[in-house]
Amino acid sequence: MAPVLPAYNLKPKTALPAEEKKQQSDHSNHILYVRVRLATDESDVPFIHGLIHKMAAFYHLSDECEATKPALSSTLFNSKTPFEPFKTVTVFLVEVSSTPFAPNHPSTQHFNHIETTLHLPHPINDPEMELFRTEEGTIIAGFVIFFPSYSTFLSKPAFHVEDLFVREGYRGKGFGGMLMKAVASQAVKMGYARMEWTVTTWNVASHTFYEKLGAHILQDWRIFRLADDALLSYGRSD
Image (cartoon, rainbow, N blue to C red; front, side, top):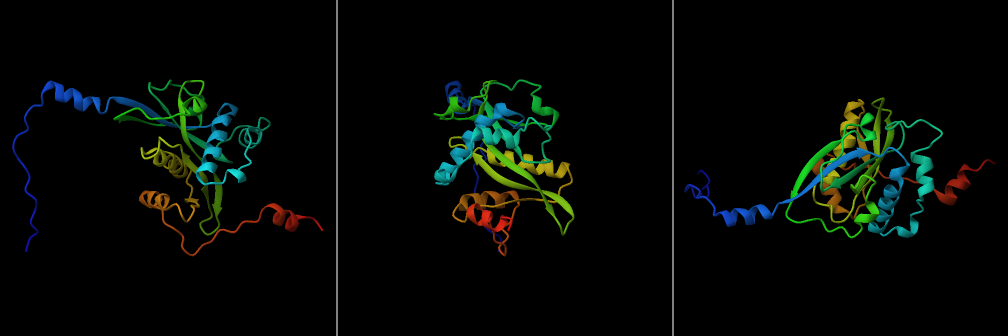
């Protein structure tokens, strides 16, 4: 027996009064311009530093976070070596603006920006907006940090995603997906085999998010880490 389908009202739609149209349009008249771009120099370090410490607070690990601006500057943008993104640790930033972005950002010579426009029902509440405001007037909302790895079985390079973070207030709007898609697009462009990353067991919302991207959990694998005194002891020359 065929399933019973719900009855739909097929009456022709009547025109809405002008005032009602205005009220509906007012619910989505806050335009937000969004783009993912490459972090290119030390001017981005304060924002990367701020995002790392915000992420540490989110995971209740602030007491373990030792990231400093000088350390980030020397490891991400070493002035003694040429800037070569994707060959070492690389950062994508997602930033927003209430006005269209200015063209010809320096990062476009290495990476084509991913841009979109959102129509929001109300402005985003961001009490830390000024801390994450760039010289251009854009607001940094999140980041992804990744670096090359290698698959011996496939004999191909890959990307390992170290961290993905979007600030509170900007979550649930697709920014995390834009950042991950930017990494995936670069992996495809360079002929890389895959992307991999780790997720805490308790962050079930992240599990669901990543599975919707098409990723799957490697149930039979565990992460091992050698660090601090154990690393010093084992790595010490006898």
